[in-house]
Image (tube, rainbow, N blue to C red; front, side, top):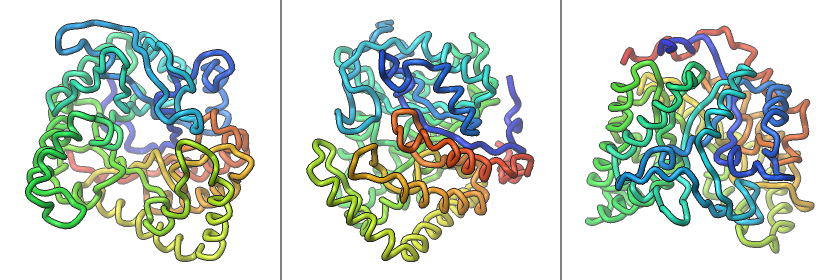
Length: 388
């Protein structure tokens, strides 16, 4: 197995394919042919891919069930091309091993994560209630991959995407601990922070003991100020998701309805007007945001990573919606991330075959990955990371 310092002189241009790599494999869908889509990923210059490993489905249920087939409903619905359009039966194993092997055959590195998708019959994700459950499901998953010899190109493991949002039982406990009032308006109180610190930092610490040659983290997309107050000293890297849409003012402009398309033309007009009129203001806010998260990683003594990022959180192919401003904005942000020594960098969260308007601009992707990887032999922050 690889040594922990194996990646210290490498940087990564990463794409994020979430659970879609598994659920969109039926005829006519974006992942119908893994060989084709992975070849296209390589053609665009990416050397890493972040995917859902479905650990809560691979590990046996607490009551001992070893069910291997699961029925997953669409998460975002028909208007948003993340995941499948229909309710489908899926079998995560051995599909995960097959897919990762195809990645390794193309020298694509892997970041493992999970969105803890629900299964309509077992509701297995509800068993994830704290640190012990996170350790249990990930230990099982990594042991499966180890037996297949599929850990050598795993860059890191994100124990839960955007915690605690995708763990209903954990999130429910956080809400139960909300009394008395938060220490500061909009923030978690000390009991909530202590519970999450034990759940997340504690689980990362245990996983590092079990798997000393691998790197572990938990990704965040909210409550950054709360997490900054927690002890995250077990984390091997910081994996935060950073969008301009997180700016309260811009977020109100770019908000799209998840259920229908009645306001997309209006939104598109407002977004383009704001981007043109207030471009300097948004750049100033974004560079401060990028600096803030890099400084946080520096305080922890770990590298900074971003795999979902830059402009809107939600966008898609639609006659009203242009990808041009998204690509222009992402280009500027990628340059800022490189200049600020980010370690693993995504070009956007739309770098996937189902977003055809973004995916089919091969030249743009190649220009972005060239920017990210041009200093691939430069020793990064990893060399200065704490020895853990």
